[in-house]
Image (tube, rainbow over the protein chains, first blue to last red):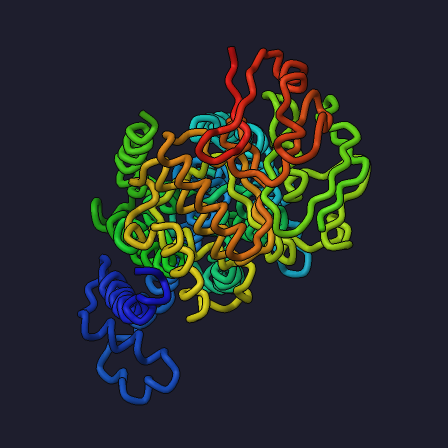
Length: 350
Length: 254
């Protein structure tokens, strides 16, 4: 069975997935130190949706509950939702372009590159703003772009990118970049807390402006990448074969790299480095639905959103009232998964 | 139909030197020569994977560098030496990828694309394999799938780079017979790099023998495969006879 024969099945499952995402958002919003009932949570969220709000009166709900929900919890959860979707789609498209199942923005060091860019501008250029875009986001993009370029060229052997060289290039750049970040931390004790947040990953500072910024960047980017999903399938045959099937290989690589890096940079500039999401989610989706990127990309976006909301809720729930950085939770899931994938690749090579 | 005029190509050192070849539509061509003589490079230049430094290539009187990637993909299919796919695509998925140059960007495969890929699968005996993952196939089956993909691509020319070098003799003959069938029934021009001189002699209408970066001899098998030429190019003494069953040139080294 191929994609077009199963299209209606995928559509049904996707609709169920959206429904699941809404439930996860409501349950996660309900979760927290202040005690607000599930029914009230649902009512407050519904009251903010245009058209639907007429049917959900807010009578009898405390004003503080509304504020906690709408200004603290909801932006945080929506941010986790967008970050999860973006990281998963970036992971999927990196795996397609690198023809390598282990590619992920964190493992390749691209996230660290963005974090270093952000750190440098926080220390030196904090007040500078152009056209409302802060230098932090811009230099995160620059850092991520440079790292992608360097890692790609170190890892490349001819036109192929073997797993081993890719992982080593990623590890090397990760070490270098994080040690530079640590160095900057020791010299700039005033900003240390902000920088720590960057290196561990957290949604605790989420605000509506972060959500809006991320929405504007990631949603069009995900749509853009998904229009190239058939080309990404064909890239898996190798660059020469893709070219002989009429794919503009160099153009495709350029578009995907720039858009993916833009997404990683914007994600890192609002939430710091959150690892392994781009690795775990696309692989689970491939296990369920097969490798066709026309299916993997939309379902990864959905799955990534659900996965990261759950991880973030866990990070709030394990040691209340204090929080564990969400990057630690995703690593706890991610590292065993990474080892499993490496084991599978190893078995295939024998 | 394909004209190669004074083409040279170099990476760090020269790999091809002053190549002149004319290729006519509908014939079966084989490119032969010792390792390192430039056979694969010649093929990669024709498929525009490499760009030439000197000379010109015309396909149907259009300069190769002026032909867009997608337009070229409707004209010419390529079967590479070996195909490894990292992810578990099904055989049908891989063969449908051959339809890529015919599908507009925002569309999925149409009924016609399904039909064309089905024909290609029937023709190559891969229809029974269609739901299997490519990674579970044997070398011969995999190669048949890649040939089926080239057929589904619906081109006038198919280039093949050592399509049978990793196969056993049964699989080798099976693939070669399929190529001949395509060549005769659909008038598709086949250009295949081969190592086995006897198999090349059995199938080729025309041979291009490369040696030391140049075309050494270009002609029908009887003209190219002579004792003198093989001694010169391969440094090998051979006895040349006819295959008593087919009447084709047959080479025995001694």
